[in-house]
Amino acid sequence: MRVRIRIIRALLVGIVASAGLSGAVRAETATPVATEQSAQSPQFANTVYSGYRASRLLGSAVFSLKGEYMGAVRNVVMADDGQIMSLLVEGFRTKDEPEFISRIPFKRVLRPLHEGAIVAEFSDLRSREYGLFVDPGQAQDEPHEFSISKVIGDYARLQAGQGYGYVSDLVFDNGGKLAAVVISREASAGGGTYAFPYPGQTGRWSPKLSYYGLPYVTADQANKAGLRLDMREFQNS
Image 1 (tube, rainbow, N blue to C red):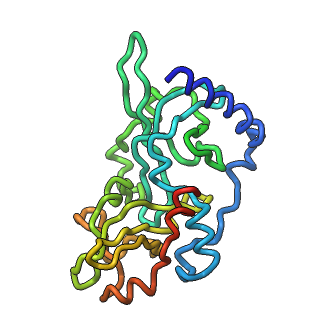
Image 2: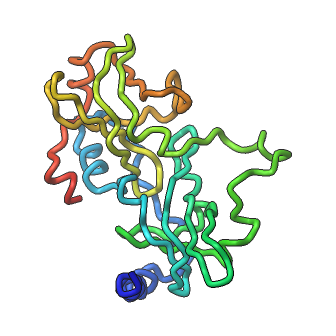
């Protein structure tokens, strides 16, 4: 583990240097919201194959600007429109203190992201600033949020309730906004993995439900609306 951390730290030197540690990094212009595009468009396909996959964000090591290893990403919290709001990071334990969980605002994360290693601008993960819970007095001002663990692994159903498959991944664009929901179909329905544009808000579907609701009535409509993925290209992206 220590060897792996040292290797990642070495890589981070190049990451931080290329970023320039300037405000321009966080001001990076996001790609057009993929959900406004057809799933068959080249722009959507490019976002899906080159975007940030939720499955790869989970478990990523988190480092400070000084290259200090701070912990690993355990969950990702999004607003209703799909924008990443924060990362839940499990901090490492020390000789004197146990492991802990903190919440890092996504605006403090340097971009572009790099697989397996995330650099965030913060001083101390144990600070109250990074607490998990919002002050009750300010809760009403917070946007509706939900975590990716409420979506990945859920059954995917059509509007009439028929099963379609299960959510196997999510893809975010370079601005940290949810662009696509990746669904793997069950074998009896023909199999295959499809990417569907996120509609821009939860709408009729709610993270509180035990399934992800697709806005299509029939499986044929869903098949035509989604982008069937080349899994070799997707998994290597």
